[in-house]
Image (cartoon, rainbow, N blue to C red; front, side, top):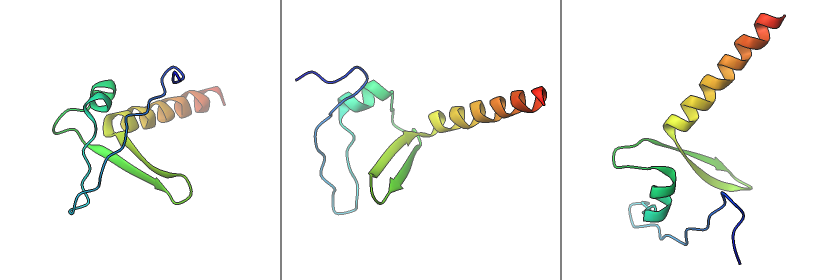
Length: 75
């Protein structure tokens, strides 16, 4: 069965004794994750864990602030 465009299943990972996981190579390639990158770990007790590249979150926050500034200019 083919996944929808932009949706991926990278397989499973095991949590090591120190609580560490290895992000599969294909996932690192798709999302451009390189050694030294900072990742943000988000959690929802009902839905689970999400890992986001820090720069993606910063760009998202910047876009929100820019949009807010545009909205304030129209008032």
